[in-house]
Length: 114
Length: 111
Image (tube, rainbow over all chains, first blue to last red; front, side, top):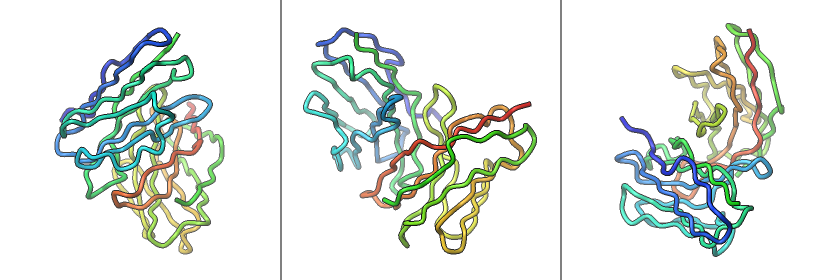
């Protein structure tokens, strides 16, 4: 079975540019999570969806960040405009409701904002 | 969610059992103990979880004390590939719950 798929794996952009990160959850999973990991702050939950509906976005740092889940097999995390402090590894994870916190993580997207 | 306390780092010789402790003295009755690990440059990986009974799977065993205030993750025969950061997390299981990752224990398995 394919795991969680994230793209791109690496992204280098300049400050002020729009960045879109993509995630395809495992087929049959109905919950999806976006995390950010930095050396300073560790692994932080940004937002999560259940059945394509955002449940908790309290971890989204500010209005420059937005996330969507238009269908069960695709989600995006957008940063507009990007800033150097957004540089981090962004992980997507998915799970089924029956084992809600047995989450399967993708390989991550390493974002560098210059 | 209850807070957990883990040692910052541990060493283990290859082939020996690795016992990783975790304190969660404020755990509530409906909260589970989850263990994840993160190998360098990879996404976190689920290992095991439990409520109050000891649990075992193909990766590890989880021993939870009777008062549920602490637990130990056991890797029975550690290999070099088990070198990773191990996170102990306390959380519920419903859709309103979520995982809060702390700083974890960095386990170094050596020859």
